[in-house]
Structure formats: C-alpha cells, structure tokens
Length: 252
Image (cartoon, rainbow, N blue to C red):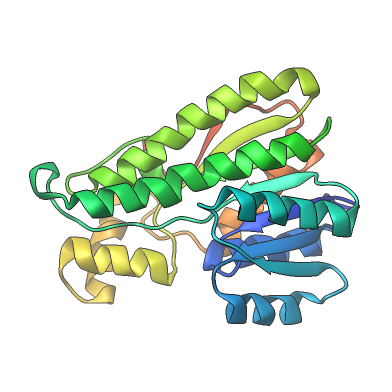
C-alpha cells in the first residue's frame, strides 16, 4: 500500500476524528504528515501513535494567517516539499431559525469554516508544484441544506466556490483542488449535532438520521479517509474542481 509513497502532507484539524483517520491512512500509504490543530496534547498523542519519523505536528489557529503560513513553511522545511494539503478543521455552530440565529455564532462559524480553509489554500498553494493536491472538507450540506443550520450550511456551500475558483487558477500549474462532502459520520462531532437537532439520546438521534440515508447507516471515519487518500493520490490525476459526495446517498 504505497499510493502516497514519497509524498508529504499537511492536515488541519489533525487531532480530530476525520483528520487523524486520514493521517493514519496517509502514513499507511507511504506519506509523511504534519498535523495542525489547537489541541496540543491530542497532537502529541497522534504523533506518538503514527511515529515521529513519519509524522510531526504544529499547534496553530487556522484563522490566523501567520500561523497557517508558518505551518506550511514547517511542513516544507521538514519534508522538502508539500504535495498534499487537507483543509479539514471546522466547527458546527448551533441549531436555530435564520430569524433567531445568533449573529456572533454565525460570524464565528464562517471565520473557522471559510476563512480557515481559504488561508490553508492561500499559503499551501503557493508551496505546491505540479502533481500536488488540495482537498477541502465541506459537508453533505455543502450540496444540500436543512432547517436550522444556516451558518454551517452557508459556510460549507462557500467552500465549493473557493474550491472551484482555486481549481481554475491552479490548473495551469498542474495542481488539483477538490472538495469532499461527507454525510453523517460516526464520531463525536456528528453525535453532538444530532442530539441538538433531534433532541433525543445519541442512539435515538442517530437512528433518525439513519432513516434519511439511503445506505441506512453512518460512515466510518476510515471510509472518509479512504476518499481523501484517493484525491491525494495519482489515481485521481484527472480530477479537479469536483464535489465528491461521501454521504451514503443522502444528497441524491
């Protein structure tokens, strides 16, 4: 399993479930990774698991341009190049009608979910050369939406516009840019969303969501990571500007 042999990667939200699952998959496929997150202790544990010879970390706020630029520079300094960037860090916000949605929460969600990936794109793309790949983690609600999630859905739709613009700009340089759109995934992030949205126990709330998904279950984080590996690898060499749904059919 060496689809990413010799490649170097930067993953934001690297201490979270999807970020860490992707780091595991990248290392298993031969890549070296730099994980970026706010949680230094979780990053240390992740690098201990992955092995310091193939993984490193940097504590950084992805809404801080200087911090993101420094993380990209650290990846290039350590690995000699940057072949893959996975803009994965994000937050949900709250559930409320548009007419009642707290403005400060809306602003915070857009700052983390839109400005953060923009800064990753801005600084990572400067360091990338032909054959490189930027993957932005959007959501199934970057293709659809639902009542009560105006901030989250707005932010995830915005990433499609960012991706399509960057894909056109970077195509002449041979650098690819795509978004992934995960559906409900079996992790703490999704569980918290479901409990808030449904107002029932974790098990009951998950069951309600499963009824909405044609494949009738949540994704595993490894299943999401497998798609990121594909987009990072040369197997997807003719894919750019794509919105890749990994949602069990929820967006059909």
